[in-house]
Image (cartoon, rainbow, N blue to C red):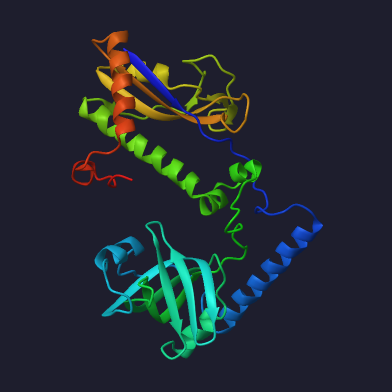
Length: 332
């Protein structure tokens, strides 16, 4: 019995410029912003600040900070000092009281910069912060007068100086070509893209867990093959200098998985990268991922049952005890 499920990926492309309006004026404006950010980076270095340090010790993620301090009344000072980090996504205010919002992978929190509490070195760094920068902050956990959980900043470090501006906050990144050419920018600008990626990663984790629960063994088979087989498709070719031989990138893992069954493995599966030298669009890529599973003592009915089971389990999402049973993250 065999079953195969394909998960196609977006087509890889050559890098392109960041999103923005087309035309000479837009290019000139982007260049000016980049020059200003590079000047700020140089100013940080002149102050003895490394704009790209390698490590920052957090006391909590931003989601953990919210969880530990939920339900606080407005204008509350907790007395707890936290160290958190994130990307600066908004900045507002001026003078003696300024605000910023940072985001990490788990959530967001407001930063409060009060001139009376901010040391001179931190104030000097803050003056050189732009949207898109990664920063690490130290400060007391408080709530604002409106009740928003905040960090009253007493220490500020640059963790990564952004040399290009983020896509427009309100309009996001809509140009399809740029989204697929620069996935990292797409993920920054479009939360829906992040959600789709998260679903994909959790789906693969669930598929692995459910197959292993039915005694399937995850294996790896050769990607370089003397002859592409297991499907009808045009392969990519490459030359192995050590052997002076032409190889092809696999178009399917089928034949090697079947050899494992012949060799005594009764249930095997592989989540495999396959390569087919054919068409490219936003829904088809010459490099894609497939899941193929094979088992002895079964027929096509068992394959149908397994496929249905995997799809249903993936659609249901992770179980409540996912953390303790598989080590993966909890439900979305």
